[in-house]
Image 1 (tube, rainbow, N blue to C red):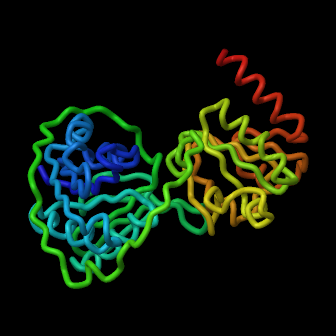
Image 2: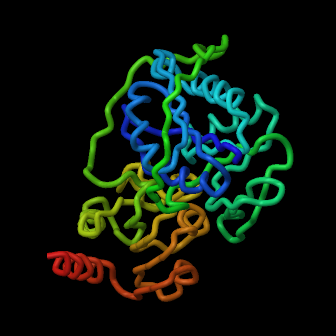
Length: 320
């Protein structure tokens, strides 16, 4: 059976959820071979094997932490040359898409970004994507070379599928450009205790209708009751009510959770582009003509200052 390379996104050996989703998709195409790089790479092996990796290629070197993406591209290219895979899968993120693009250019292959599903086809993997601000769903395949595909988080379930997970050291030769851009400092991100926005199964967002930073506690309370991440529209971010890192939309982050709750968000195309692929969409807005209602599965026409606290109370009471 053909082998499929899966780039592993991990933090000191803790494998992030999008990678486990990629292993589910990779098994549709062939035998997953995981590539784990940097500090804690070998510690990922047990988790990767539990989720279907038949082999885990590992490499650790100072270059992976001290410099930007090029050393990781060097390593992924070395893995590609060692395995000759049927496809290369990378989690969608700012870094992931840069790694994928650089690899595709090096090996002379086509690339598909932000896939939301993958299936095996007669002429190679077929990827489902959302196009034109998620107004259309397309199916695409790479017509030249080995497909390099980035996949959005929450595109597939995490499924246990125990496999051998044989660990092998990956020999990497770093190119001249690998040390061109050095990381000079790092600042730990303050933890909110909430899930990562792009990976969360539930996202609760607030927009212009929240009417001020002092009212975002209502959005946060609902999110916390559901174990959700907090998002914000561009209008809320531009007004300084919430950090830009939480912006959902075309110029912010793209999310695809199981449940998306939009509060006080009109539903402009810029915002829809970042959340339209959510599995279930709920909106609370006092304007019955708001464009967001054309998109939702469930809509509540009402004042969010009345609806959201009641919803939070109901969720909390049911959990209790």
